[in-house]
Length: 458
Picture 1 (cartoon, helix red, strand yellow):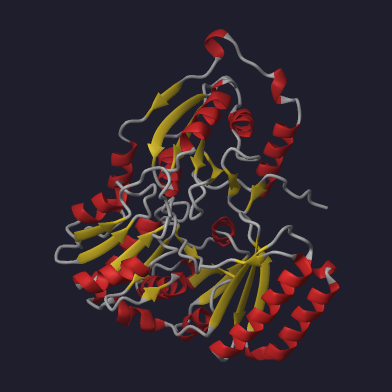
Picture 2 (cartoon, one colour):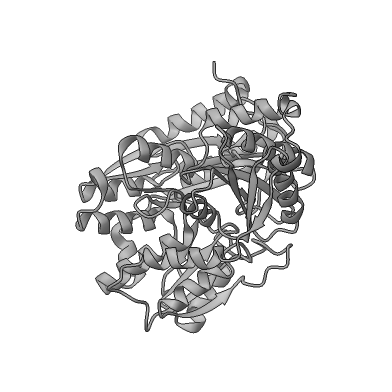
């Protein structure tokens, strides 16, 4: 039986900053663990550390650096940079590992730590388990280099510029963005410098939102979780498209020229069709998760593209892409992985690919999005006191079974715990919005009754 992870969720370690496990003490031990696992032979090792714009990033950055240096490994600090930018820098600079300090779309009081291997891929479960074993044992305490063997810390001053050049090079050289008006919301997060520069240097007129981080306003009513202001601004400026990133800029949500939200499923449908038509979709296959709308499956079937499903989490999408030799996948939430360009979800890169489709086809985003029609879908989050095994709560088990029986083959029900927050996510699809909303409300009420907790309001 595989041992369950204690600290790591679906996307690294996450929690309220300065409360376990997101304390300076634990961060230092995580730094020591990744340094230990990256060492082999006598070669001097290097680990990249980047972060988003949260106030607590300073505390955690210094603790991680101290832990890594204490193991005789050097640290390369890049400051605020999107998560995919850290993956790129880690790989391109031939570093031995990369560390990102970010809680992604969570509010500023939370923070997280996630790790990349030398090739820019997120660590597999077995490596995360090994790290947990190391930080919970005394093994690392016996390893303390001294004198000249202690690690050094350096700052990479041109990391932002390197990443901007990399992103621009993913956009087709025969195209540009001249004459295009873009509203861009950077969520007061890690992409606040990078993303505007990329689109402006490619020729677009860019109206920016969420580019004034102060340490506490990341994701605060802005970014991919809150596209309302973006939609309003698109309509106000009669822009061609709206682009919303999250706090660490690994996901993106769009607003079309009419001010309507275009989610990750529609984006995957647009890009998969484009890649397939140009003969560049590996094995003619799209990789996505069980959370994607059934409408995506129907749209892909219509154009002869196979869909492979994984568990929720972009790391599992990437693992399946590696296993099957696929080059495109993503999540409904806006994580898209263009594996020919980068090793992880990259919101700015994904936006560039969509803009390229718009340029090549000479069609507005509203027209392109018609490639798929979403089935009515409802997602309800319940913040629970503890993550109990649902099958062990008999009344709740019976309630879920009854709802599934009522849906039969007309839709589907998916219930899962969030890997990063104390949330139970209830997702239903079916023939009508009213029916799936009613069933979702019924299950949510049952969860609150039998598990305790409260609904999470958007």
